[in-house]
Image 1 (cartoon, helix red, strand yellow):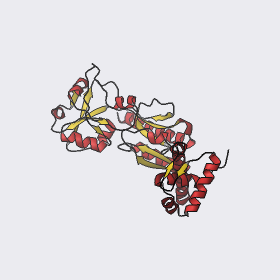
Image 2 (cartoon, rainbow, N blue to C red; image 1 turned 60 degrees about the vertical axis):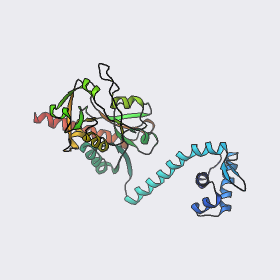
Image 3 (tube, rainbow, N blue to C red; image 1 turned 120 degrees about the vertical axis):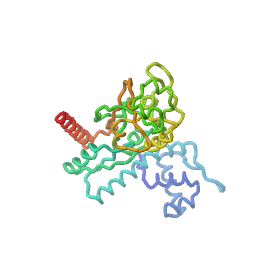
Image 4 (tube, helix red, strand yellow; image 1 turned 180 degrees about the vertical axis):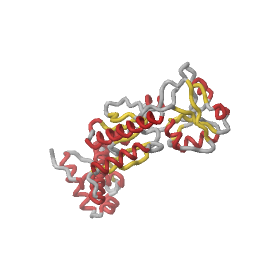
Length: 307
């Protein structure tokens, strides 16, 4: 395979954005002749023209446009790897795990992360992901793992740890008629406007968040999409919408203008899972899953003793 220089790839990607040799040279901090030299070298290695250049304009060839689309993610991933290596060298950490979450980080996750650092010098970096895009950052390699709601039906993803199932509650405004009752039957969801996540999650995952129908087959109306938990709670507090939410999150996010109502007759509970790419399973990820298992075992044992 012909050797490809990273600088040539960087030059092509910059030129694809600027479509101007002068501006590309300025961005790269080199001369226009150097830009031409790098581009020519890359075209020679690949064996095809990537850019058409006339006196009036610069544009990618069809092959060049396709190559740019294919190589850009790989280049971005390489830049990320170098940045992470630099950060590890600067901080003295031997390894880092990038973990995504939505809404709130459970205390058990924080404790498992602390133990992973203390026992194995692995730093866990937590970052929030969009509510309706639970898998994208992991599949694209921008995150090593994520704590997301199940189900996961993609062979490219592994569920390394399943959190204990939890009740699903309904968030409504304090002024809503259901707020005083404290309970609602699942069939009553057909009379509400239930908020749904927005994002690129597969249909089966979206349907698990907000069912399209009640168990009896009545359609559940959902006219509005949300991208964060706080956005959803704000809309629910206004009184026109309701939102399905798991009990642990409801216990962590309290608002005076929102009530959490128990849903009777709902068969499927909420369950979170720690997921990662199947082809990127690492000892660090399996150790994190093991620490989570131990943390929840302690919680279960403590709850039994309390009873």
